[in-house]
Amino acid sequence: MNLEKDKSQENFENISGDKIVDKTVIGVSVNILILGFTSLFTDLSSEMLIIVFPLYLLSLGISTVILGLIEGIGEATANIVKGFSGWLSDKIGRRKPIILAGYALSNVTKPLIGVTRNWEPILLLKFSDRFGKGIRTSPRDSLISHWRPKKTGRAFGVHRAMDTTGAILAPFLVFLLLFLSLSYSDIIILSIFPGIIAIIVLLFVKDVKLPKKTIETNKITKDFVKLLFILGIMEFAAVNVAFLIIRAGDFFPGNPIIQFIKGFAANFGLGSLMPSFTLIPLIYGLLNIIYAISAIYSGRLSDKIGRKKVIIWGLITLLTVCIGLSLPIKASEMSILLITLFFGLYGLYKGLVDPVSRAFVADFAGKEKRGSAYGLYYLIIGLTCIPETYLFGYIYEYFSASSAFIYASSILIISIILFSIYAPKLPNTKIKSKNAKIN
Image (cartoon, rainbow, N blue to C red; front, side, top):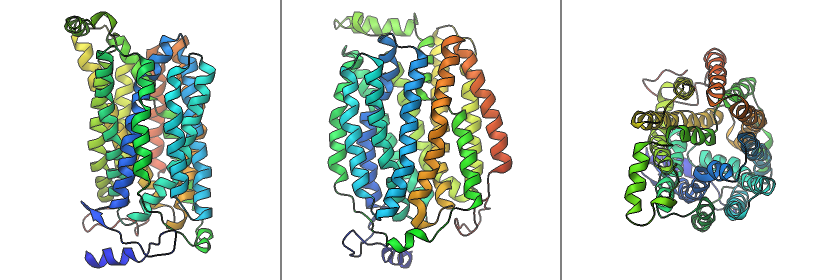
């Protein structure tokens, strides 16, 4: 084991050309942990926005169609820009400057949404926030895979778990702020503080220098193109969490549990000011707790039994959620339990599919081409985001919530069938396990 570690240290150089000692903690590179803490604070900031963003827009009288358009353009921007940033980081042979610029742009612009009342400038700010996410993600993923090239599933799982830890803290903070009668706008503005901490932490990560001559050596394989196509279809079947938050609102109005919380808060002079959606951050927090736990174990599991099986189970989990949310509901104590279950299952879906999909991409890309490989992956995802969220929002607005989730369920069934049949098998050299069968 120590021999393997010493050998891996010889493969890394910092931006000055000096050898880097790859120190590990709990079996993971210190640099991955630093990136993890950066993501933790950034996600704390981002999730404060994500939780209240759809509710904030609805409070401004903005329709779900416009919400879908904003979310679609935002996610498309993030993913399409990832394609360029991956290529750029391979071209210049450096990751950190691009990663730092992306985190800085996002964490400075998104709090400004809280002082905006019209959807057009909100779209522009969302675009800027997602642009920042886009330029940092491919180089960051590439840097993670370089620091732990032989255990990509575990490395991505640990990083994703730390990222999601921030997302776990955010809902409870938002719940507290709502309980204290802060507005959606106030919460969005306050998200600037954890964002600043994230930028400071990132300054301590070490970069990796790649010789320019190695950047041109590896080509994208046919299996990799096939994988990208199937992952793109899977993304079209995904449901944006903003619509889950809005759908959760159907489970709460007039609910006796909400009335109890308002009555309790009234003892402190707060009850009349609390919104009916106060409990949504808490069940969103459960979503992220399950996401964090499942992300670690799904990465390790996929290293042993194969990426394909884990992703299929994730898609089946999302299908269960969509079928459940398509059913008619009446607000009651039981409706609280049901929506909590659906949010929990959605978190399990994300934990199974998100880190494993990215590890799948790493398996089919040469090490010096991983920046570009992730760029192509996110480009394909981005091209599906606008039609995906806009169409879902249109069906939600002009037909019904049930119709929108039935539509998503039908696309998911098609995705599961296609992925089961056509997903390529991993090269046998990528994952080694004495007792594991590669799928």
